[in-house]
Length: 407
Image (cartoon, rainbow, N blue to C red; front, side, top):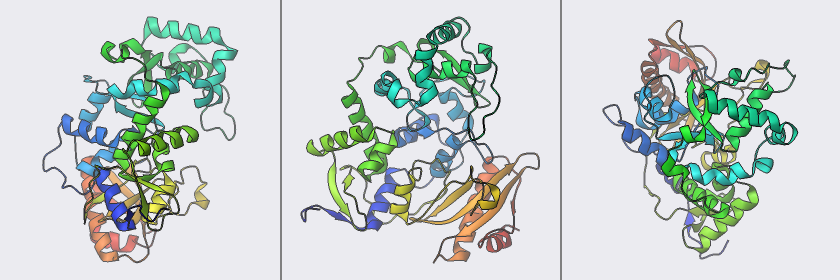
């Protein structure tokens, strides 16, 4: 690294990253408006979707982590989820993984739609070559009857295959190909099941008719969004945010450095070059308190999480129970500027209880302080989820202190 390159301490980099991700400001005293919710999503760039619902659907939680209790129906309304009125401001596509993001960003992914053979996984890219008539018939079905569910194609689910997470029938694969290529969109999700419709009935004409950006221009804008959302980041951090091909990520970052839109910096302790978004807030101190879903954009790139917070985190959903270290659905707990603990959470909706199935402290923390702050956050999230109590199991080295406070 050139000696003239600006240097940042790891603490300064951490505060910049937290501020860029929407932490450090007081949570609103009143439930945030739809506009406030949309503004935060624009700041983050996107919300990742995930099917696991043992605690809460993952896309709801990042807003709570930053804004506190809010009306989830407001997010549903602008995302087109549920059966209520739609005020569509968000749309779904493969951005990081399956994600919600502002609808006007949709054209920036047309390069990915066109690159289905290299960007999509095997069955999605193959089906148009192997069964083009099925894809065409499925598109006709959507046009005639949409919005439809995958089961409306009439296809039969194949027998389960060992080692495969998804067990899709051909009708679902055809729909997913059409979704990936942008010919159909997600009109709604009801009980998290995607309903497909033709893209002209999902995306407004004003956005559909925009000129298609050149792939490099679209990717460059996506890196800008990532850089604003991350504050300070390595090139792999920036590329991972919207899952850009590595060669494209390197090229786009280099272009933004050359144009002066990204500032090269050295973060002490990092072994890779870093880049600062010049307009990023640089707070001298920052206080945050939040439970973080495994799919929160602050921590979803595990290498960055370890580099930024010295916190090794691996989700263990797909790990056999006997081999799990911390539990099935484990959320890191952010306090101040540090990830200080992790808790394995489950919402028992029949008994109206938030179950803390394990609570684990990081080394060197003030356990009584952390337990007290964690207890308050758990009570707050339980109330938000309409759960009447918090129940702490005696599992993990922080569970005794936590149970003593919660009772």
